[in-house]
Amino acid sequence: MNNIETTPFLKAEEIRKSFRIGQEEIQVLRSVSFTVDKGEWIALLGASGSGKTTLLDILGSISKPDSGSVSVDGVGYHTLSKNGLVRFRRKNVGFVFQAYHILPELNILENVMLPSLLDGSSRKETKEKALHLLEKVGLSHRLTHRRGEMSGGEQQRCAIARALMNDPQLLLADEPTGNLDSVTGQGILELFQQLKQETDTTIIMVTHDRRIAGLSDRIIELRDGVIYNGDTQV
Image 1 (cartoon, rainbow, N blue to C red):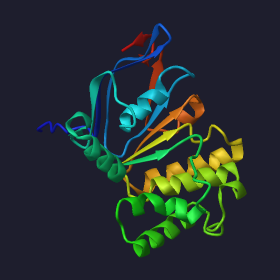
Image 2: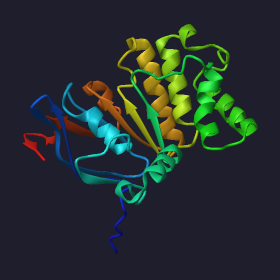
Image 3: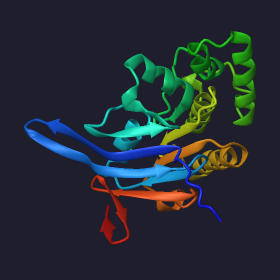
Image 4: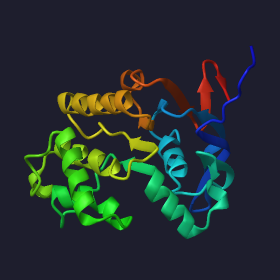
């Protein structure tokens, strides 16, 4: 029987990142390499300061590494122009932030529609899709409400719907339950489990909670800027 090699959907190679604070240079990521298959749900596990949010930003092309490379679906970020990278990110990557980032001047429906409108889609089609997603996350009764009228859980569900508007191949979530109570947080995790069952979206979720990480297909643990594997750092 022939062995068929498959190209990983996401590939991170030798990622290094440091920040300067005053006269001191802090190494946040030190030669991090790993691959992710299409449709996998990966948990980036680590304590505060381990480098996981910095790594997530690099995987989403929000931040550039000092050295190393990231490719998604065969496209290397380093090969794209600044505008090309923006277009690629808008079409292929969805973000769910811990702080929600719901725009206060827009209502729920408008917040969810925004990514698709920015991408040039028609308003009619965008509205239909946004309504479908908001029904899916249980917010169809809150369409005209604004950020100040929403609970934390509602804002996070709105953020998830917004992240899914352009059918991203890669969904990046930074501590999506971190600001929520346990019951509301469980509801958000169930949404991610449903997404995993119904689509081939690749999910990378940052968490410090090993219980939450255990829901994923695979855990990548960061300690002091490197991948930790049992008693070894790689």
